[in-house]
Every structure is written in C-alpha cells, then in structure tokens.
Length: 456
Image 1 (cartoon, rainbow, N blue to C red):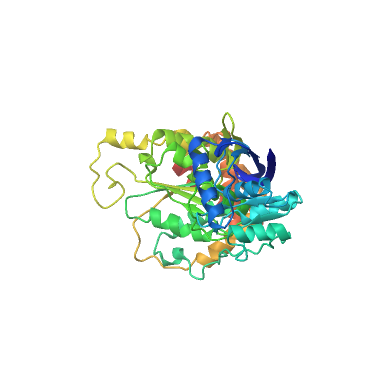
Image 2: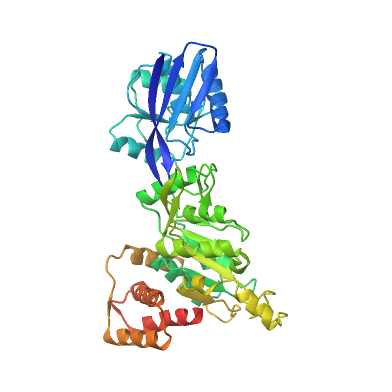
C-alpha cells in the first residue's frame, strides 16, 4: 500500500486552520472510497479530480483508492488541488515532502482563482511551510502546479485584486435636503452606533443608507482577511473590492439562516458578511419575529457564537445596522396624505418591533418631507474625514461638570437602563469627537439625549 499526505486549509468561521488530505492506493478492483465527506461531495470531488488528471495527461490509479480529509464536515471548495497532488504523490509521480496546497480544478485541469490568497499566504508563513495555489497568472493549471512542485519553484504572492479607491464624488452629496438625517448617519458610522430610520415611503430612508456605505473607511488587513474567508464559504463571487467595507441589504423576507448563517456545511449569513461595514434592513416591522429577535444578542456583543456537534466557532457580527420602517401599516402617517389605519392597526404595526430590540438602537431619526428652501451643502468629504478621524481616535474627550450633571439628571428623569446610559455616554462622546471638541459639553449630551428620548 502506498500513501501520501498533503496539507491544505480549512475555513473555520472567520479564520483559517490547517487541514489535510490523505490518500492510500492498494491493489484491487478500481474503486474510490472517501472518509470525512458526504456522499454527494465525495462524488463531485471524484468526478472533477479524475477529469482534471486525465485532461492534464496523468493517469488515475486503477487500484483501490482511499481518500481521507480532515477535519470532517466542513465546507470544501478548494480541496481539488490537494486531492489531485496527494493521488499523484501516492502513485509515485511526485516527490514526497511537506507543503500546503489549496485550489479548485475544472474538468480541463485549469486552476480556478480563489479569494483566500492573502490569508493562505499568511497561514503558510505562520507554519513556515511552502505553498502552492492559483494566486498569480504564472500558475494557472494542474500541469504548471506539478512542474512547480517538482522543481520546488514556489510562487511569490502578488495581489491581482482590484484595490478600493475612495470616491471623488459621494452619493450623499447628490441627495437634496435631510441634512439632519445625513448627520445622524455620519454619527452612526463614526461611533459604530445602530440607527433606526423612520418616515413615510419615498422620504429617502433606503437612499440614505445606500449613500452612507461610501463614507465607511477602508478595511484593515485583518478585517479584509476575515471577510475574504467568510465570503469564500458562500460559494458566490464577491463584488466587493479589496479593502472596501461591505454593504449588505437583504430582503425583509430573509430567514434566520440567511441572516445569521447555518446549514451543513456551515455558511455565514448576511450579518457576518456585513461585518466592519453596514447592514441595511428595510421594512423592519415586516421581518419575521424570529429574525428580528435573533439580532438582539449579536448586536449587543458584536459577535455570533456558533455551536454544533462538530462546529464550534465565533463569527464577527459587527456591522453598523441601518434599519428602516414606516410610521404605520399604510405608510401615510407623517405624510401629507391622511392615514387610513385604525388605532389598533397602528399599535399592532408598532408592536412588531419589540422594546428590547428598539433598545439596541441608540440613534433614531425621523425623516421629514424635503424642504425646498433648505440650503444644499456638500458634506461627503467632510463626513468621510470625520468618520475616519473618530474611528482612529484612541482616547475619548473628557467630560465637563455641566455635561456630567445633565447626564445624571437625564438618567433619573427618564429612568434609563444601564444599556441606555452606556449608549447615551458613547453617543455624546462620538458627537464631541465628530465636532472636534476637546471636551464633552452639554450641547453634545442634549443632542444625544434627543436621539435617545425619541427612541423611547
């Protein structure tokens, strides 16, 4: 019996872990047996790897081939290459030594591009291990991979992805009116506060949330790597450019699995895919009760703890949440048209968002009809710079005695909870930093309290 083992990578939540592929070839009738994969996944890998090997001019072993993958029950979209290399090594067509391989093969033997190039290189560096995969144009098929492995000519990583460039013209500058709502949006992004937008249909809730995505600063290397790993598990090509903060806007009929993740193998949901960016939930009262209530813990902790029989990991769940709602079921309340809802219908509609969920929104903004007399001001560059400055700040401004006294009176007067108190403090500090004040003064507390009281 001849055996071979090739190291590979396994997406585990928002990080990568080392995995392995072992192949044993024995004499006997032609047969392929799998350990660690479901029957459907095993069949797909067998078909792709066999076709890729034959198309590349190699022979598939005629004996009994046993293939074992570790760890079991995880998503395997890039295991074709290590399986093919392990088969060639066990068949003594390749030299045996330790390296790391990852990639998906087509029937013709072409090596498909993957979004895990940067974290793959990082993991190989940590373990001091050479690596091979489709990360450059020099290695594009199985033949070239085998040649590189034989000659020990390991590729040098050079990113070919499209870097994100800061826009010269911001969408928010094209929106007329609603200057107060624009400021609330900017404050939410600067302090990473969740915001609830309320108003009749057509007043600009969705447009504001979409325009706000451009104001988010670029991602750090760690954030980009985590998102790349998460996006690779969705089996969908990402339209997000490298370094660009994500913006996700699922339909209000999204399921709990679609929002939080789930399935076997596990696939992350919209909440994790929007981490470090923004998540927009339109028509929040129309979302199912299970979906809205499932948001409460992740919005508070900024992470999603996923536990199962064979899968236990933590996922980031830290987007800025923009939620939008009408003021009533017919949508006419607050507009120039008369509302057709009864008092009971309004109460039922408002009750679809529970108070514990409302408590997760420290900012609440009511959008009014656009004032034609309001002077239009370009705020895109100013707000983007302010958001970046506030996020980069390591220390918060100190509080004046007057501001502290106002805070204490507000806590007693409105009987604010510990969560509401912490949110009020955080929003006040964000406002002071956003306006480049050295101290938190009464005006900042007044503004933060205004958002909070309107939310109560």
